[in-house]
Image 1 (cartoon, helix red, strand yellow):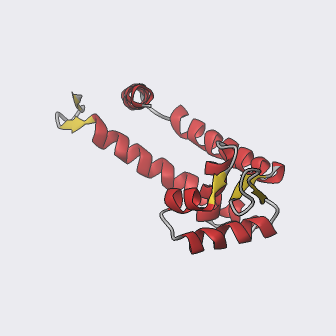
Image 2 (tube, helix red, strand yellow; image 1 turned 90 degrees about the vertical axis):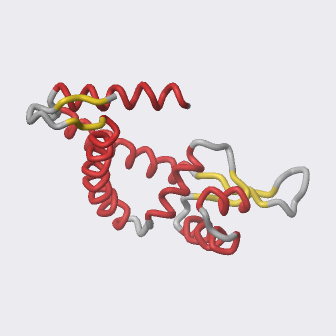
Length: 148
């Protein structure tokens, strides 16, 4: 969908949304970084925790695939998160050689806290939007919901 800006320039909603994402991402990342640093958690570790928060468990190969890492690198991520007590390894009942990783309640608390921080940050940004910007975000939200 194309719209005209007050200056008469034609701007694509996708480009405006990309600008919004880049701006809010920068803001969210800065806040997220300071919070994660307090708990000695890296961004990849946090992203893994967010994956685990929406799954009952993931295998090491699942983790490697989702994170775009080798299985060895995924094992290192899990090792560090396990030391911080954010995840735990469990053996599959049907095959004890199969290791499954699940998030602990402490890990869920961290993810929940960070989601809350991000939501607050986004709410602040969105409260300062003009009507055209808010419409762009709403169109994007609707399209994303349809595609999911």
